[in-house]
Structure formats: C-alpha cells, structure tokens
Amino acid sequence: MPNDIIIIGGGLSGLTAGIALQRKGRRVTIATSGPSTLNTFSGSLELFGYDSEDHPITHPLEAIADLPATHPYSKIGAERVAALAQEAQGILREAGISLKGDATANHWRITPMGVLKPVWLTLDDCLTSDDGCTLPSTQALIINIAGFLDFPIEFIRAGLDQMGVQTTICTLPIKTTQARRSSQYETRATTIARMMDNDETLRAFAEAISAACSNSSNPSEQMILLPAVFGLTNDTALQQLRSMVSHPVYVIATLPPSLLGVRLQTQLRNHFTQLGGTILHDAKVTAGTLRDNKIVSIATGYSETMEAHSYIIATGSFQSHGLVADYRKVAEPIFGLDIDANIKELSSKATGSFFEPQPFMTYGVHTDSILHPFKNGQPVSNLYAIGSLLSGHNTHHQSDGTGVSMLTALAVAEEIDKNIANNDTYSK
Ligand SMILES: Cc1cc2nc3c(=O)[nH]c(=O)nc-3n(C[C@H](O)[C@H](O)[C@H](O)COP(=O)(O)OP(=O)(O)OC[C@H]3O[C@@H](n4cnc5c(N)ncnc54)[C@H](O)[C@@H]3O)c2cc1C
Image (cartoon, rainbow, N blue to C red; front, side, top):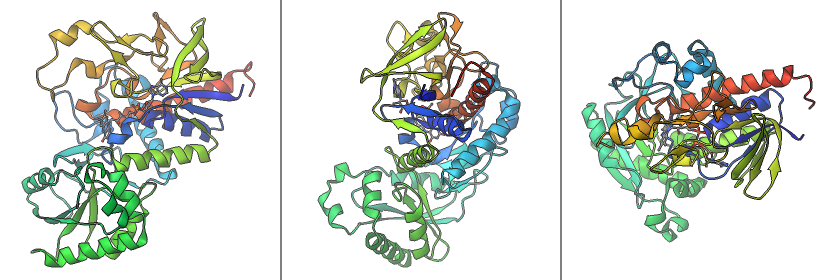
C-alpha cells in the first residue's frame, strides 16, 4: 500500500494535515481539484473573532471555552486549542511564512472595504492595529497602480478617516512593456506581482513612490499603503521595495484573487512536497467504496482507484463544492456522508439581509468527538473530516474559519498517527 493517508482537498485544512503527518514520518497523498478559499484570503488568519451577539472578541482562548459542544473546537477539546494554535504557527513559520500575532489576544486587520476585523495572525507585510483604534501613523499616502481595479481605495480611505488618519491618494503607473500590453480588465493582483518580479520595474516603482511622497502635503510622518501585489512565492519583493523607500510601507489585501492567499498556498504546498508529500492536482475524487463502515478505496475522475490506511476529507463548504444543495437537501457529494442541516429552517429562519447569519452557514458534515463522519447513522472508522466541511461553526459570523481548518487538521493528524502506530496488523 503506497499511501498511509490520502487527503481529499488541498486547501488550508488539507495542506495543514498533510504537513503535520509528513512531519510525523507518514506517507501522504493529497488529491485535489479546483481553487480553494485561500484565493479570497485577506492576509489574516482567524481563530475566533466574534461572539454570538456579534461582539468582537479580545481574548479568543478564553471565549472558546464557552462554545457549545457541537463547535469543532469543543469536539477537539477547548483545552487543546492553545497548544494546537502554537503548533499551527510553527508549521506556518517552517513554511517560510512571516506572521505577527498569537492566540492569547486578537489584533485587527483592515479589510479592502476599509473595515477593521479582529484576527489571530497576520502576514508581516500587512497593515494592522493592535487595539482596533490606532494605526502605526496618523498620516497615510494610499497608492494604487494605474489600471488596477481590485483595490477599492475610496472605501479604505473612508475607513482610515474614521480612525482619525489623514489620507492622501495617488495612482502610479508601472513602467514595463508587459504592463502596456495587458488589458486593464485583465490586470489582477497576480498579474502585477509577475511584473514587479523584476529589479528594474521594482526600482522604478520605488522611485515613483519616493517622488509621490515628497509631493505630498504630509511627507514627514506618513506611512505608505499599497495594494498587496508583491511576491507570488515569498515576501522578498516587498522587503526590497521597503529598503528603497524611506517611509514605512504596508500592504492591504485586494479583492480576489488574493495574491496573499495564492502565496500562502504556494508556500504550504512547497513545504508539504519538500517533506516528501505528493500532490495530485486536478484529481477530483468522485466516489469511495465502503465496506463495514470503512473506506476500502477512492476513485478519481481519471478512473484511478487509490487505497490508504486512513482517509481525510477536506473538501470545504459550499463555495468549494465540499457540500452541495438544492431545494430538497444538502449533501456531501463523494461518500454521501450524514449532514447536520435542517432544510425546513432555510425558509423559516433565513433572514432577508445578506449580511445577517443564515442557517446554512453552520451546516456541514456530522462527526463524533474525534471527527469521524457518519454514513447512515454509523461512524466511518478510517475517515476523518476537517476544515470548513464540518458543521457547528460559522466562518463568516464567528470569524473562526482558518482556525477551525488548521486546528482540526492538527488534531486529526495526531489521532491518525497514533492509530497507525498502535495498529499491529498494518505494515508500512
Ligand atoms: C469568500 C471567503 C473569504 C474568506 N476569507 C478569509 C480570511 O480572510 N481569513 C480567514 O481566516 N478565513 C477566511 N475565510 C475562511 C477560510 O478561507 C476557510 O475557512 C478555510 O480556509 C477553509 O479551508 P478548507 O481547506 O477547509 O476548505 P477550502 O479552502 O474550501 O478547500 C477545499 C479544497 O478541496 C477541493 N475539493 C472539493 N471537492 C473536491 C473533490 N471532490 N476532489 C478533490 N478536491 C476537492 C476544493 O476545490 C478546494 O481546493 C474565507 C472564506 C470564504 C468563503
């Protein structure tokens, strides 16, 4: 048997589980297909941001202790969250990702809509506030790039105004042949990052920033705020830019596709493969064969059959088609796992406002206390569910999505490793 573990889905939860298991010396294959929600990543990871009354949480570890038994943190054990959060930070650091923050106290990020949100960890490049009131400077020069439409600068300015920051706005061109050739309707953060991955272009841009600073009315104390368009695979380009500009420089996430998320995913994938893991891209898992509540094999769209000792399903929620729905039911499409969902609620309890919590946001795969999902009322003994596929939490209203993804992945990795170690009949 070539694989100890097959992970279905290569988003944040699948990659975290894969890295944790490879670090323990297990042989892991990730079969994944389609984009993950990291494409919309803001640059910050969230552990637990808002309580049920929508109040921002300052100390997430304390608040997690009061969550209901159905929340994934309660299932893995609220008392383990601090240690698992540390382990998650260690994995991100090992993957070369520089972050600020920790689990004891939330800090604040500014969204592309100019709103502050409480978060756990933020990429070092990004603008943050420690207390939700003050920023590193009370004066900012916000710079956009000519032709780039995914940086809503007026919203950001309005948000900063409310925090008492005096702002100036300007737009600078990028001087490359490639920039002249590309249509402004196709200019995405990732396209600009490729253009900026060139010493000459970066230097010319830094010189344009310095000139804009000296023309500005508040040149002395101001911070420079840029869209996050630097560094597809690491943060070197921004570090270089910082060294060429005398003012402090920060980035703010753009509208999707998020370069920061693409970079995070690339760094985690590289770390996983460097540890010896295998990723099968464009490998959509279409079905699984079960016998006696155990998975025997899974099948991909290429009609391949794959086998392993244990399986992890990390296929995400509705956005990633880990869950599918119609007017009659919500379903998990690969194995037909049992779902915690109440379809009648959808019409009776759904609220009219898009921004209010909606019942479907907590729907997901039903699991036991060690995250075995169920099929026809019985736990599937060698399958584990992790990440946003799980029921009982609300990524959008509790701001707990990335924390749930990473921490359930680590808890399951520990459980599988222990099981394999204890299983005498299983030979490597
Ligand atoms: C719009 C949006 C914005 C968000 N922004 C943030 C943020 O800024 N900060 C934050 O902390 N959290 C954010 N979250 C939450 C966070 O992204 C998620 O909670 C978390 O990353 C989910 O990771 P995951 O691995 O569980 O699922 P996903 O990211 O959904 O990954 C699942 C992967 O599995 C693949 N897959 C699905 N079915 C199959 C199959 N049959 N075979 C093979 N592969 C399959 C999918 O294509 C996808 O690549 C956001 C969520 C959304 C929806």
